[in-house]
Image (cartoon, rainbow, N blue to C red):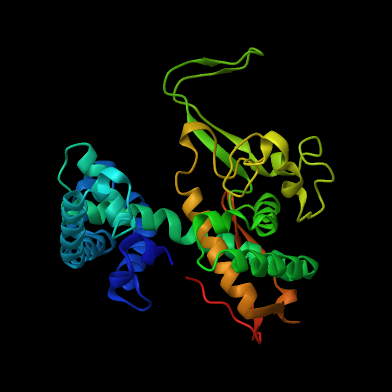
Length: 341
């Protein structure tokens, strides 16, 4: 799903070469830099692009991806020319393409820069590295919580049917009306956030930083907030140890009707960060995950196996927790399935 939004359906289809390239690049990008630091002294890092197999593979993936994206970038430029000629750009009319290739082209053009295939590849691979594992990991946490709280599944399905009857095509507005699902997703992120131990990491670049209570943090020191303690604070979340699917839905009343949705950042949850450094892709993740569960919940039933219940649902990984990707789950097709447009 990330690939389809990032590069469009012509390259991002299932089992496409782009899928293989992007996943291979992400795997190399997450492992090769650490290997370089363990293998070479800092003054030899620059040689890694020539001698380290992981770094060399990253360059190889990047070159091939540039070859695939060059014609796509050409079609986007041609589309922009047509839209300008027809006046659609000035009037806000529908655009031919809505994906990251188009967005990055528009962003570079707004700064008077020419977007090259190589620069496009660099930007897209950064987006893929940031989005693939976080989105899939968060979705798996939500799936585990749905299995553990079957009483919420029927209500979410009823909401999906009701919203789809009013919106035959799943637009962002339609997805925004899935408030019960949204509240469930946010509660799952409170109880089982990937950033369960720390969040809102910062480096003091100009200091020392002095807080109102006199606490001093020297320059070049790193700070972070304890995410788990914040999420389980009873003063912040009454009855914090209980999974409450409607907890965040109840908050969305009056002036707060547009707050406390899954991608919101604020004082109650800090998993997406805070302030102007909050995760810029959180809205993309929100829509992607909702589309996934519209399809999964309407098309399938899920439950743990007896053997699966013997294994841990979540695994600690440094300052993160990850849902156990090896846990077996039983999946059964339902009689009614929905098509996600």
